[in-house]
Length: 406
Length: 127
Image (tube, rainbow over all chains, first blue to last red; front, side, top):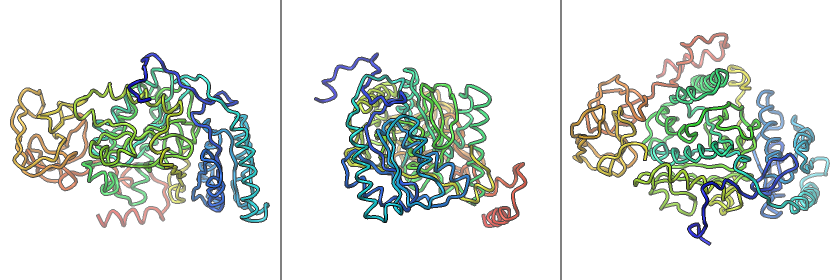
C-alpha cells in the first residue's frame, strides 16, 4: 500500500505503540545491550550482532574511570538509554573495574519496571564466557520483549528530537522550517519537541530567549549559550573555520550566526518551556524544550534519546546518513540535489519548499510521517541499520574552568 | 514558502535583508530586478559580478567594510572589506561577530587559573 492510498484524517493524532510498565510508550521494541565503558563495547557489539535484529548495542569510547563531572554525565546517558521506552529490556555489560557501577545503572532502569540484567566480563571468566552468559541474558530479555504488543497511543505521549547535521543553506530555508512546523503541530497535539546543540544557538539566542516562558528558563538558556561560547574561546578554537564546518561553508553557510538562525527554525514557534541538561529526562507533554548539548550531531541525538525521545527528525542539506540504535531517525533534506543523489538515505523531500510548496504543507506531511514511523514504519536509517551512538565527554580543562553544566 | 523568491533563482528571507541566497548555480552578469518586492535595499537591478553557487549568497546593495550583513532579518556577520552589489558574500569578505578566540578574556570572568590564562593570551597574540 502506498502513502497515497491511506486516508489521512488531519484530526487523527494517534499511533500504536508499546506501553511500558511506567506508562511511557515505546515506538520500537528493542533489547538494549549497553557497555559501561570502552572495555565492554566490543562484547556488547558482538552480543547484539549474534542476536536478533532488534537486539541493539550502544558501543562507546568512555574510559574506565572518567573524572567526576564527566562521570555523572556518562551515568545519566547510560541509564537513560536503558530507561528509554523504545527499550523493552536492557543488559549492562562491564569489564568489572569501572568506576560507574553496572548494578547502579540497572537499579535505576529497573525503577521503570522493565527487566534489566548485568554482565561482568571478569567475573564470567573472560570474553568467551561473557559472550556465552551474555547470549543467555539477551535470550531471557528477548523472551520478555516478545510479549509486548502495540496498543493505541497518542501524539501527546511522544517526545520527538529535532536534529540537524551536515547543514547547508537549504537547511535554514526549507528543511528546518518544515521541521519547525511539524514541531508546532506536535506541541499543539500535546507532545514534546526538543532541539539541542547549544553552540548552534550562538547568534540566534535572543530569538529563543524571547520565547522563554519564565525568567528562570531564559537565564538558564542564556547561561548555557554563554558557557558554550566561552568553551570555544577557552580551547583556543576559532569558530571561524570550525563553525560553520568546512562542509557547511561549502554549502553556503558563512558564519555561526547564519547557521544558528537556520538551526533554531527546527524548534518552530511555540513558547520555550524549559532547558534540560545533556542526557537528562525530557518531560512528557512538555511542549517545546531545549537540551543543552554539544554541537556534534551523533552525541546530540544520543543525549536526547537518553532523555527519552522515541523518534528523531534529522535534517541534512549535504547528506548525513546517521541513525541511532534505539530510536528511529527520519531523514529530511531541503536540498534537491541531495535528495536525488541520496534518495535511498532520505525519508522526506523538503526541497519542495524551494520550488514553491508551502512550509505548512511540507510540515503537515512530516507530522503525519512522525506518527506513521511511531506506529512502526521503518525509516531509511533503520533499513540500512545505521546505528551511530556516542556520548559527549567533558574534557578536564573545561570541567575545571567552567564548572559543572548542571 | 517563507522568504521571497526572485526570478525563481534566488531567495531573500526577509524584506530588511542585504543579501539573497542563490537557488541555482548563477552565472556572472545575471540580473535581478528588485522592483516591486518592498525590499529595504531599494528597487534597483542587481547584476552578479561573479558566479554564485547554489546555496551561496550575493549582496543586494553595496556593503562597506565593518557594516553588518542581514539575513532572516537578523545579523549574520560583519563585512571584512567593501562588498559591491552583486558580489558573492562568503567567508572571504564576511566574518562572525561571535565566539572569537580571546573574547572570553575581556569579559568580566576572573578566577581562572594562570594555567588557562597563558594559552589564551598566546592564542590572542597569534591571530
